[in-house]
Image (tube, rainbow, N blue to C red; front, side, top):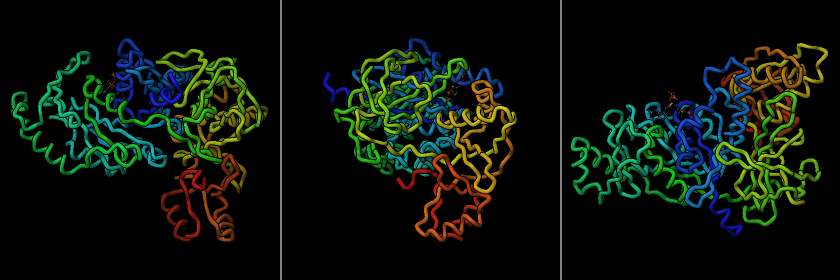
Length: 527
Ligand code: G4P
């Protein structure tokens, strides 16, 4: 197969959702379609259990498993599909955001009874910023659900994207009768409790033909009215607008019952983008360029403390990656070769000789890589768009074993490179502050410092709202602000100034009093 075809048949995407909306169930159904797993439950049993937050050995064990499930590739009808896992539970970390820098599109799963929830909103911010095309799957229609119009309004308002329904539910919960496929004008009847049988596909020529009355006489009229309202109220599907991240197609269904999933997958493969171009500081790199480039978006430490090696996840942006070929590591200027790069097919890893744009390879790393590092065939390229986001939880970190301060510093640096959390240094007192996006990260950090680096630390409470990166052409105003707010000023890992706002109010006040300063909740505003 030629290079161009290899690129065009690739779909690299992430599934995002709030915990419990059904991401794991949907992933599993997609893998079943792709023949990547044989039995239902294979992914599920690997899932990080919600109850395990205080069991650290369990965290470690599950971290090991999540290496295997963090990229799942499979072949389906001529397409090479790569699903990148975006951890969504208490293990939600910087890592989750960063994974979104490596996807070409996203499927958002929403619980039909709950609507848009907090974590989905946060992840959508990243998609919006990166202009990632999204498809929405409204799940659990077999349960009592919110009204479809209300759900669509909520998606539109909360996720700030125009929607266009491509399927329409007929009732929900006990009265759920199935879906009307707007795109193909077909009816899919729902037979509950039969998750392995394909739904009956009833073809009807337009909804007004009267056939709907035969199958669900009580709801047929409502369906007709709702479809009329929907076609008047929502724009028609426009592929270009979807690719520009201006329009989100919406599907309804039930992942658990495997209902509406095939339609979702079919449409996704049809319309989702193949790997396109990647913005570098120096220039835009197109996937079709012959010369190989790629970037590291995730680093995973080995769970075995006796082998401190790590696995770096590299997304290929252009060209063909080859085993044992020498590549330039842009940040250090050194050449590197990889004898055992791994590919991820389903839950398995295997050594790969060649990989194409859109693919993810795992590279064995002894501590060289940092997130965002670029590999090339010799050109100095640094990909951008891998920013840091303001953490949500902050604590001071203190050494509790004076004899192990070196180990602590080293361990903290490594963990920050992995993207477990962010570290800031207070400009007034020099104390180190750890910021995370999920509270579990503090326990993970403490546990891993002890077990992997022999260092022990304690955390001290710190009430902060957000970390803000600053932009101000007026140096005098900036210096004035920094002097007044010295106790709330810190440096990030790159030495940039960061204002640590204590509350939404204090951030508003700062914005009001210092109109010349822009406060950003994302680090690479200026890039
Ligand atoms: P997550 O990865 O987004 O956290 O969600 P997950 O797939 O684990 O689904 C959360 C719960 O919702 C699971 O139930 C799952 O079986 C259920 N679920 C997913 N899709 C549907 C659906 O379409 N309809 C219904 N009724 N339920 C659905 P659980 O009880 O938490 O787990 P389990 O005991 O079933 O494994």
